[in-house]
Length: 170
Image (cartoon, rainbow, N blue to C red; front, side):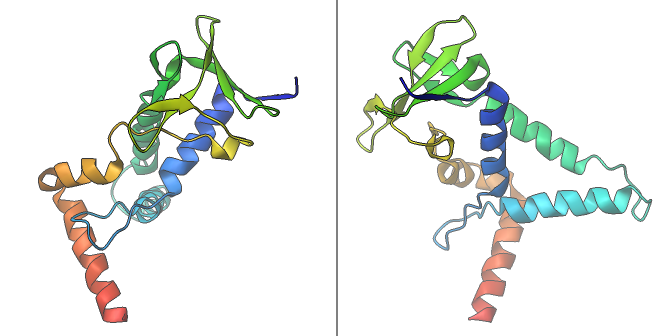
């Protein structure tokens, strides 16, 4: 069989990149999740803190990366064996002929990777390349943000500011 194997760290890096680069912006939402802007602010903070231009330590980006690491480790992975956390996966593998994805668990057991359908059922995940492996969110980020809007006042202010700027530009 013609298969492609990836190590755990490669897949983890891919998911980290997605979490740090995919904005969730919709004018109908109470909160925006402008992760690219947030990442840039954290990076800029550290760049200013290193030479002492602002009076704090360069830890903002490290803090953001730690949040993303925890998010990735706790991603739910649905398999034909059971529900696992991403940290329980050793190696994903794509079978190029069937496009099925299997994972080797830390217990050295193989399991078929499943994905949720629009109807809430599960089916075998079929992909051709690593980039097509999706992160199945049990609860979409937009719903989490809506639910936590009262606890995220700074993100609310940023959303209002971005909507105002967008309105002014149009």
